[in-house]
Image (cartoon, rainbow, N blue to C red):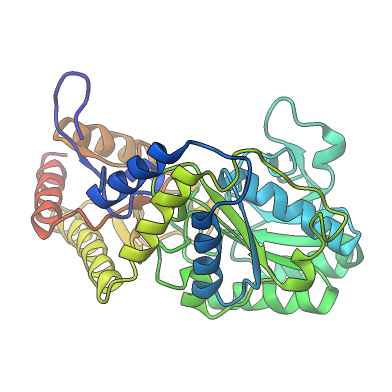
Length: 382
């Protein structure tokens, strides 16, 4: 992409994840243009909306029913409301460092003591609402077990990024996700996988397919809209049937399932289903992180990287972190210097030590090699 001064950059942000086919994919752009020529919005279901819903249910076995919305934030807000309506409980569990959109119940940081409910992390969030959110450490299965032991009868749901991407890329410990599933089943709570970022990014079955965990509800965004505003939430039939008009939980949106967004999403989901797509994406992303790690090692720089599917994380630390506390302990000043040096060299990485990066199908082996070479020059200089 090019900035206002005409300088070119190789983009590893990709609109924060949706552009798995790269910028301005011709097939996607053509589909949006054709949809726009027929009308921008109808306030009623369209054939494309039904086709996309059927495709999502087909690709994600845990989803018996799905509803389209306009953003990932809207999807997570709706899923949490649905979980509360289904269980008749108020409390929710989230994890420090995970981001689920800007809903009031989710802009909450950890309380001051062990197993205390949270405090607002944004102005405008009522304390009375934040007190229903319990914030725990990511990858801490025992902490989750303790929370259920203390508050199990009041917990409506647990919501998690199965692969965290908003405190840099943090891989889940297998026992963490497994414990989450077991505890939710045992206590009658709803397990929500927030796959807004990981959905169709880390593999063809998303994170739940990659790790073999079946959530009760899932939320999607980013890739499923192909770069246009679109989100989705869905899951078990008995839970989804609590949504109006079948049930008492209200949700609606004038532009939900917008035909332009649906058109972009359909093209994207069909193209990424091509044989070998994910194998190539995974290999190229792994080549980037392994190449950068090796370059840093050659020059004595404490640095490492890791990748999952088409997502990657870069850390100025000896080993990849497993929690927000470990991310905080990394050398963030070194990351900032590295980011600006790479930007000057024409490589656009996520401008924060707390964000994951993304490789697309448009990136070539030559792009990866050029990125590693530029980074090595910076490591050598510093």
